[in-house]
Image 1 (cartoon, chains in turn blue, red):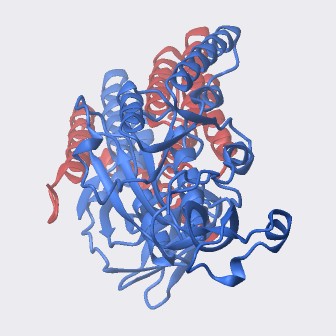
Image 2 (cartoon, chains in turn yellow, orange):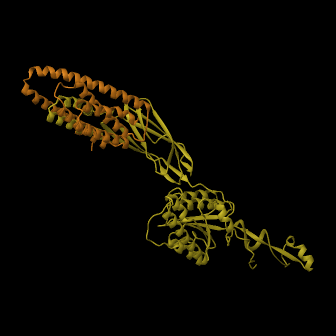
Image 3 (spheres, helix red, strand yellow):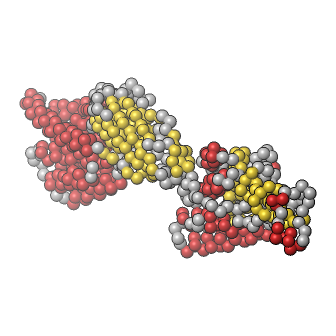
Length: 425
Length: 171
């Protein structure tokens, strides 16, 4: 609690001193009369200050939201003694927008009566926020002294990235050993027909291909491909972030990662996540609804942190980047350390798909559209395309996701054809 | 609370000195004072308003010293003092609650407080005038200035003490 005089008290004291000085200087009674209201006003400062006990209750309509959702914050204040002017401010993160009402109010509080106020907040960007800090100023009626207090009680809210529904996702080249939705190159029990070969002892009669057998006058059987699942690792580039939230490149990367994670989990795949930034953070691949929630929780605090350290993905435990995994790298290709890492992964035999978000779109949003800015953006866009072409030349599969396009429209061209190669039995 | 509420106060604060002595230096000073006050009101800052009030008092003192000596204008001085106080109060109120949602109860009670205080100040002035007149009957002419000066010093010291005294909870 801090009790102090206000700028008004000092302004009045200055005026009083100045008036009295001039009154003595010009020897006129009128200036003494002018000084009387100022002096009378200042006298209220000398009164004893009885500070009232405040009780503040805060209620938040929801603590788990999606981007763009709204929540209502209700605050109830009561006091043990009358407070003529109570100024209350709920501290909000700059990312949160007040839609209706105000987080900053001035109330008069009567003892025994609760003063209530509420306001609605829109959460446009993902993240974890705390709405529990309330600053209180209790003013005297004359505005000459105030008591400052602060109440900090944790009221965390989590705003999750909005998840776009994606039906067509890039199919992994290699599958794992558990049952899943992908047609594996390996032959075995399945429903997807593969090659035809002559009948061998031990073959099931239900697999005999009668049409081929009649034509060749010899028994032939149809082989089937197995349906298997895949391991998918989402590699998130947090070395660089450009643009203003909630449309920064990192925000878009996280939305894409969340959408991909849910799309692959719906196909019974195991999905993991690696944050490649100033430090490495990961969630091991797993499957199921719980993994989806774990991944979204893991994506929530992703942010850029400055570092000179060059990370190496080969330091990751093998279970985080399993062999035969599909790695989807989400990046704006701004930091060469990330580019080198994905080239290295490709060289190590991983199936890597790069989802590249042009940083130019995010930058354009925060620029005033002057000719110089526009020219610079065009040159930058050309340089970026050259970089993409160079990486494609090194064998990387790259999908460019321009701002405003649905994610699925970018992913559809990456849908791969059914594997035709037959593994030796 | 609207800025418009301060317009009559600024107008009265400038009008009293000009009415006392309608001279170019006074008009110029009061014009500058008004400019600073309006600047402070628009920018929700206290400093220009304080500077404007400071200049207005200087202009009033100039008007009193340059104007024709005569009877003491009690009503004009009281109006000037009250307008000055109201101007400082309203500009500070706007500054400190800028951007906040103010409950109608607070506005109503505050307006009532300001009106009540103005009446109290007028009562104090009346008592002082009568008291001063009675005291002047018993004090010789040479001692009047000394008593007035002592009163001014005591008043200023009291106000300063009230403004700077430490209370429990102060740092």
